[in-house]
Length: 119
Image 1: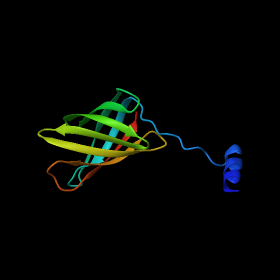
Image 2 (image 1 turned 180 degrees about the vertical axis):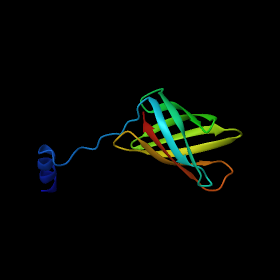
Image 3 (image 1 turned 30 degrees about the vertical axis):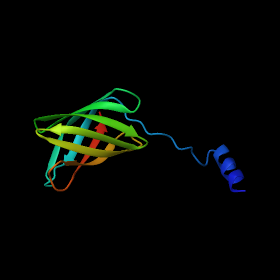
């Protein structure tokens, strides 16, 4: 009975099938908070290298960081190098194409936040 009801609701368009999120190549506005809570802004450029992987470059506060990234379902993760440290950020892909995430750097306590908004 449940299968018939779900099939009927799907047929009527009342239940939408799950769709995989995507991340588009291009430039994104960056707004975030540092580990100490201070704010920063800048831009990020994403270049797709396959259907699920990409290269990313952030330009924030006069600093440039480069990394690799990967999309998995609605999670988007990137690893990057900042000076002598390695960083990691995990974003959730939003319906409007923006990315909302939290990041950290090896050897540091805490995490920062970041939002990438397509330009």
